[in-house]
Length: 499
Image (cartoon, rainbow, N blue to C red; front, side, top):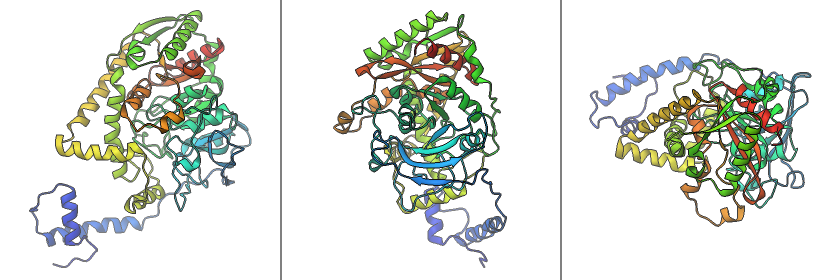
């Protein structure tokens, strides 16, 4: 039997069948199967001849910049200074923006927190970057990540450099808090915008899932990925989200219900008199909040009452299990992302082919360095698939839906929900360095942030005064899906009352 086109060798075919769990004795003989494959692969020969549509840069003037000096960046907020000017005029005219270094800025190296050679330089802007430039902003920095290669420098809390600055969007938070940029963009899969915002005393928003396009992000899981603004004031935060929000044809979420943006800045004039605000009881002592955190939260509740809101307890029974459910969901999602070379499955958005091929090559050559979660979770996935047929992942998906139902039920009876953003203050860096990794502190730290990633509800962290060790705390305000206006309404009022 003649095989005209290239096809897998018998050895390759056997390896692929074993990897996919196909029967050791296939129903077709090997040469017949190879012939079928050879014919089918002709589809991809034809595909290769079709020109791929390109996305033209709207603002081609770019300076890829340089790394910061130690004197310029004492808290290790910045991986690279750069200069990408946007439109001459617009609602964000002249604003200096830092972009977390897992979000693409064309022409500027993107490290994802890992030193690689050669460096990957994106050829397309992330949608959020494009929209910020359209609004007149300037991209002036790529910000570091907590998981970054230590040679970039360990991010330090600008209020006390002996302490951490929070989760992986820490560089964005530090840059805003110290005035290195006017505002920054972070990514939030489990709290990575809100946690560093709380620790650094700034404002951080995780919008409703799908409201802000994620195209251009180094994805973790399309159902958990969020991009959000990090700013010194609620007004700036609302102005950025107005620009960032809305549907885009490239986005992996484009086939889902179309999000609607709004006039978020208009919420500043509303006040919160008469609003019913629910305190999630499970987010306090049951979540492991420290005494300093609880004291700051109670002060925040009193200020909300003074502003005319009714503050009352509500119960979400699954809340304290949110971090565990999140880790189970993420285990499945990260493996799917790795198997698809960083692009994910089951979406109709644009694929960054350059990134896909780069990630595939790095995996193939063993050069893709992975943080603890990304290197450990896939091994757990393989074990659970082999020993429990993947059933735990189905259970986690069902529990996720139940958590969403419980939150929606609470929001049928109150206007907003509140919690402490983080259960405790920042940890000391020297103590972190002396301890081996433990899962318990991780799940405790994320106890109050992961639920909103699982369910997609909007969540805003606003500064709520000192807590543990006199360092900043955050008040987390959650609302109904696409209810950012109401969330900002409370954020404006709380900030204006002295927060």
